[in-house]
Image (cartoon, rainbow, N blue to C red; front, side, top):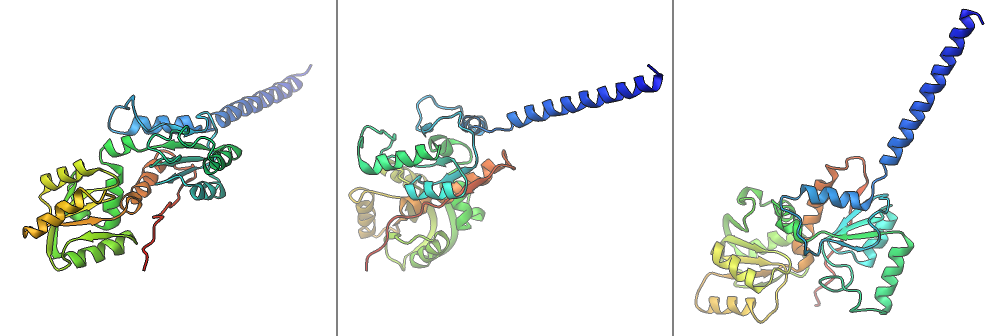
Length: 295
């Protein structure tokens, strides 16, 4: 065989070898690019600022963690309507702040056999979805992602010390303050205990279903004029404010509703998560306030 023939054979061999190497590396990289729900959850676990708790509601509520993620939907409440919108958006991994199955710990036994729950489960299974709840660590990480998102939406950053639950704003009347709150939050069922003409400056926050103990703790620690809560029973916090006003104290209570008080936090979470997965589809899907005010 001539030297030219040997060289040509060697070149062909090298080309084939290079092609096979590229093919192998490419296929391996493609295999590794398949993102699973478990991998996303692990990314969240490693990037919150507190150790992951052993007892927590932040678990996969339904579905398999090894499921390949086509897209991620983040939402305040994983209602069936939200899941349907997630499917339409091409998202099979749903991260929800609040429960999916009508109880604090998503206990499927409570409503076992109920046609509404069964229909929801069927939809999740048929569309190979995974539902993960992110609540406990989301509130406990620094900064609290829910408060961060709400403060940003309200335009209160300049009045807020990150990590606190209090604000000191330019003095205004309660009526004007609530009107501004309603404008920025879009809240449609806000309820108020207090004189709309009273002057307010110091504001305390206890978003979501923080509970009466937290309401009074924030009230005491902030010495606020107006306390904003997500939801409240009507026989503890509200009558306290009624009595305070009867005594001539400058105190007011604003009840926003759970969804209206926290949903903006999931918009913040969407931006936070997107930093880790810039090339992955991540959609915020609004659950919204389910209530409307009668006339």
